[in-house]
Every structure is written in structure tokens, then in C-alpha cells.
Length: 89
Image (cartoon, rainbow, N blue to C red; front, side, top):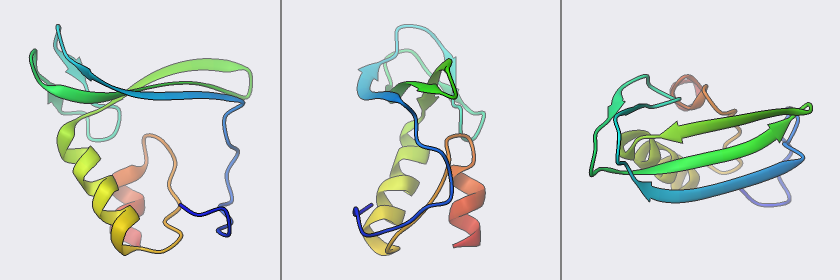
């Protein structure tokens, strides 16, 4: 998303996003599906309104996000609402 876009949601005060390889089975924070051991996933850590949260995004949801960012100018979405926001867009 470019700096010229305006999204009506509060941004985190601290944010980190990294790709990891799962050692354990995790649930995707976007679709609720399983991230299996050995699978690459995106791990998000942030502080929203003073609350610390760790989220995980599976490869399928990451592909949706990558596609939306490439094809939908100013795509605004919030963590855990990616798929519904993508459908609406």
C-alpha cells in the first residue's frame, strides 16, 4: 500500500512481519486453516492499542494478500479480516 492511500483503521505502534518455517502445527489467523510443520508462513507480531498480539498467515492467505496488493490500488484490510475485505474489494 502506498503512503498516498488512506485507510480508516488504527495502525500498530510496533510491528514486525517475518517468514518462518513451521516446526509445530499452527492455525492461520486469517482463514483458520492449519499451517503444517515444514510449511512456510508469515508471522506477525505487533502492539495494537497497548495490546501485544502474535498472528500467523498461511501461504494461501499470503497469496491472496500479494495478489490484492498487486491488483487493487489502496487495498485496505485489517489483520484477521483479510479474506472478507478481499471479497468486498
